[in-house]
Image 1: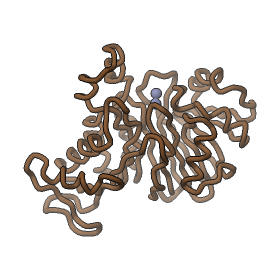
Image 2: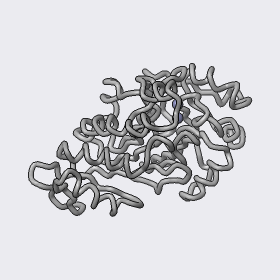
Image 3: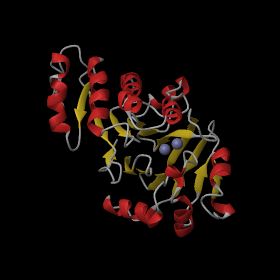
Image 4: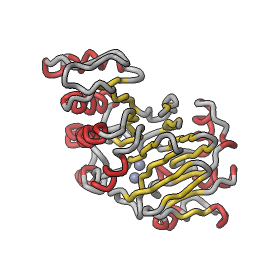
Length: 298
Ligand SMILES: [Zn+2]
Ligand SMILES: [Zn+2]
C-alpha cells in the first residue's frame, strides 16, 4: 500500500491512499485545483481516483469535496452526521454518489477494506479509519482530542499511521490565541498535542506500527522540528529506535543525540539498536502544510 498527505493542517487536509488497483482521497480540504496539482506532484492522475472518504465536516477537510465529486463523479463516503453537517457547504452531490459509513461496519471498496471508528473531536460524527488491502494496513487519526482505548485497539495493528501532532503545549499557552480557543484546542474534543502523540505512539509502536507521518501541525502553536523532537524523544526514552526522514532530519539527529546529555540510538537501517532497544526502527516524518509529502509504502 502507498500513501501520503497532499496537504496537512488547518489550511487544508487531504491524504492519498493506494492499495493495489484502488485509489482513495481521505478528505479534500483544499480547492479542487489545489488537490489536482498536489496529486500531479506525486504522479497521480485525479481521473484514477475511486472515491473520497471524509472524516468530518470542518472546512479544512471538505473545501474541495463537492467540486471533485462532481468533476470526477466520485462516490463520497462519510458518516451520517458528517453528511448532515457538510451537505450545505459542498454544493449538490448526486444522491447516487452519497455513501454513508457506519463506524461499526466495514466498507469494501474494490480490494480495500475501510473500517471507520469514532474520534473525540468537536464535529458532528467525526471518524478516523483503518484501510487494509489484504497485505498491509494504514491508520488515519487526526483531529482528535485524545486517543481513546477503542482507537488504540484499532491503530495498534497498522503498519503505517497518519497521526496528529497538532500543538506544543507551551507554544499554545504563550501564543496569540484567545483563551476560549486555547481551551478548545487543548480539550478532549480538540486536537492532540506533541507529547500526547508521543505517549500514544510508544504503545502503538509496541504493536505493528513502523511508519508514522505526523500530521495536522498547527502553524501558530507548533513547528515541524519541535513535533519531531518531542515525539522522537518520547519514543527513544521508551526504547524505540527512530529513523527520521526528510528535511531537517540530519540536523535534528544532532539535537536529539545531545538531548538531556544522553546518547540516543541511531542505528543504520538493518543494524541492531543499542542493547535493550528494539531493533526495528520506527520511521518518523512530518506532513508539510502546503505540499505533498513523498509517497510512503507499507
Ligand atoms: Zn482539521
Ligand atoms: Zn476538525
